[in-house]
Image (cartoon, rainbow, N blue to C red; front, side, top):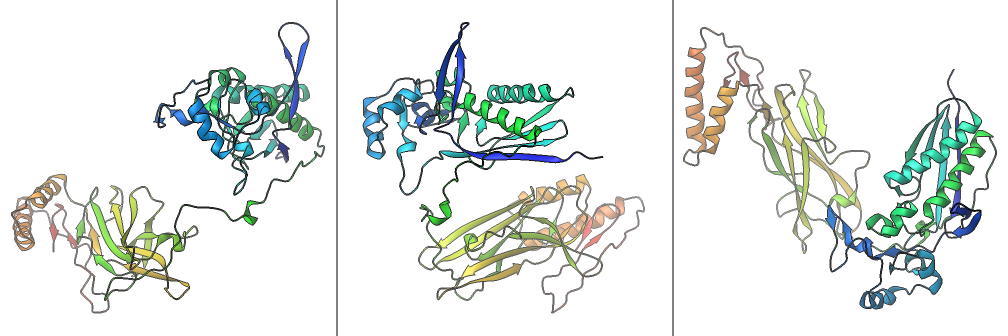
Length: 431
């Protein structure tokens, strides 16, 4: 019998969340709460693998008058803000920035899901390793009081809301990048531990919890962006959207990179979230093109280039690195997109490349082909003639190996891009 899935969630004002903590070995209790969101100096320093700019360094726990002056042009933190954040010198008082909307959230969503003895804690931030461990232990403490079964706790980060980092109080005092990005102050983790223990308790007892305050709906705001809008698209003179202006080579072997260039519209006209900007298609024995790769495949790449800002003309370069395990056969590249008409409206288009062949060749013969391709002294016709001669030579040396025709695609006026493909057992190709 399966276990029911129990989910409990609520919203919390991180600034007003509070908890009473004990300090030292005596009964010295202190009431703490969250702070208005703020980013510290070390946030601007970046990390070891991605350093920031200017003179900012990780581990900074003192303010700089010059940078404070720059900060105050945006928003000035109050004395309470500075005191609340403690070791963090405030570089951006994001909790005081409201234009065009709140720069960082004050209301965050917390959530737990209980499946048997597995607890999934959906946290609205990036927890450091030690913060995650402490959260797991806090949840296990509640679960162990309710059951003798071993509990597994999964911390799922970046759920529902994003509120930067959560460090331990000790990590916060050091003020490296993560500590400076713990936006609700030094007691952020402590507040989360209390909140998630309460959520787990309510889930076990199947009690309803107060949903808490409602976060602002930013969909009603005029969101600002530095990305310029798409005004219109036009193809090159004498061309149509979807025209393939650079065709792929006729033949390709595993490891080769096949590419094609298409006249295109702007990709932001339609993000194609339920489709694909490109597909690599293979012709089946039933004369049907079936996709074998798309823009989510590792071996494909989609590059958009704006050719003229004035005319609004664009092109896309689609490349495909032929996998080792793909079947020999006839392939083509297809591009799908949308263009914005200058008089209004967005319309779909598509284009396909010439057909090309993926063949199986011996490593020795593939090396010969590569050496010929590298030579700048041979034109196309010379390379074709020499390839035929080498093919005949290799076929004769193949100790009586019979040549076998694998596939033939005849030229047809309705399919002007079809090509011819043969393969013999020695791996030689015949055009």
